[in-house]
Amino acid sequence: MVTRTVDFRSDTVTKPTEAMRAAMANAEVDDDVLGSDPTAARLEKEMAKIMGKEAALFVPSGTMGNLVSVLVHCDIRGSEVILGDNSHIHIYENGGISTIGGVHPRTVKNNKDGTMDINLIEAAIRDPKGELVYPTTRLICLENTHANSGGRCLSAEYIDKVGELAKRHGLKLHIDGARIFNASVALGVPVDRLVQAADSVSVCLSKGLGAPVGSVIVGSSSFITKARRLRKTLGGGMRQIGILCAAALVAVQENVAKLESDHRKAKLMAEGLNQIKGLKLDVSSVETNIIFIDIEESSRITAGKLFKDLEQRGILLMLESSKRLRIVMHHQISASDVQYALSCFQQAVKGVQSENGI
Image (cartoon, rainbow, N blue to C red):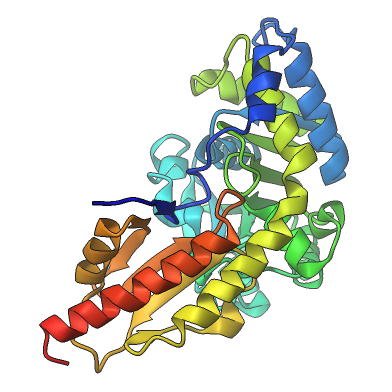
């Protein structure tokens, strides 16, 4: 019988804090589709200021935030966007840029640290002389932190170089900043500096920051004007959204400071897991709150079996493949939870090994 649950499935699983619930209950609201919700306006103004951009727009999800951003920049069907082959937009967002926007993705290999080689990005830009047969390159997308690389951070210097490349070729730069505050905290670089070179950024409020719903996209005033119209087209225009934005304001004001602790707990967890025979981690690559756990090739343990055994002990995580598990740390996991989870891992691995006669 499970007596304790520790939920590492994602940083999206957090529950609203009491402060968030109180803010939601007392939120001043109006019709945001008509541009009248004061709490939504306050959140958008605050996020634009924090991110160093002219304007911002609340959207229901990060997927919509990225989709709207890409479609604003690539407003002619047959446009092409250059993005990482292991990026969230390319893999996990239903191919929306293509199916809805008619935008063609041109992938460049992501390195282990989430970057793409600058020379490969430049080589992927279409020659305008070939417009009779090629799509037209209009946008480059980066992801920071890079989830599939284990929450690795892209530096301001790297982003600046991509931004310079984009400008040189008359392109726009969008950053999928679902966990941009994690990158800012881990690098010790103000978030506005980190996105200075970007024409637009999507920022998730319901991941590490712990709000119950929503993302914000930021950019120039003209960009946000176009984005607002596209949000409505996609069904993202909502009425009294101040109820949601009130919780998001609390998240931004109170939870950014907690990210450093999340990163410390993730590193502690990774170091502990790396001591367990049969498991393999690159501890040095754990820069923020995501941990990938690989099963050693010589081991007869499967990730699926370990996943089920841990679930029975109240440890919830994500099964990535037959040889890989994923853990994501968040502010509602305590240091005690980490120690408890490590003991459960030790017991579960030992149990599976015993069953297999290892």
